[in-house]
Image 1 (cartoon, one colour):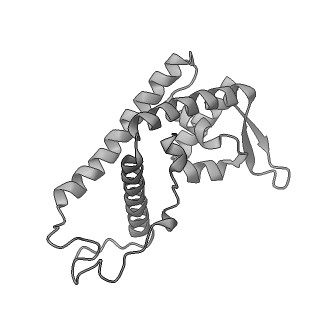
Image 2: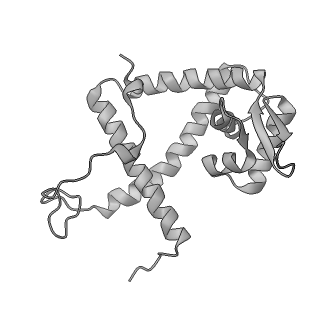
Length: 189
C-alpha cells in the first residue's frame, strides 16, 4: 500500500475539537498536559536544521542523477514549478525566496536549460516560467527521490496520522508567525 497516497495535506479537513476537548485555560491540551517552552524552542531550531539537512539530501540526489550545473536551491525551484506554468511572483510566494537570490537562481536555471522564461502574453512586464524537457526529467527524478523518502518515513496508518498531525502543526505555526509579522502582533505583555 502506498502510504503517501492516503495523505490529505489540506489542514482545513482537520476535525474540529468538540466541546469537551478544551478545559478552561487549557485550550487544545489534555488534562494535566503542560506546554513545555523548551519543546517550542526546540521545534523552531529543528525546522531550520531540517531545511539545511533537506538541502543536503537534494544535493546528494542531484549528484546521483549526474546533475552538476545547479544546486539544491535551484532544484527546489524546479520542484515547485513542476508541471505548472507559473509567474515569477507565484514561484516567490510558493517558495518564500528572497528577491535577489530568486532572480539569481532563475538565471542559473534558464542558462542551464531547465526552465523557459517567457514574457506573459497579457502583461509583458511579467514573466512565465515553465520546465523544459531537461527540467521535466530532473523534476521526475527528484519526485522519485521524494517518493522513496516518504515511503521510508511513513510505513503504516499510525505514521500517516502522525505525519498529518505534524504537518498541521507546522502549518499553524507558519500562519501564526506570518500573522505576527504581518499584523505587528509582537506585543509580549
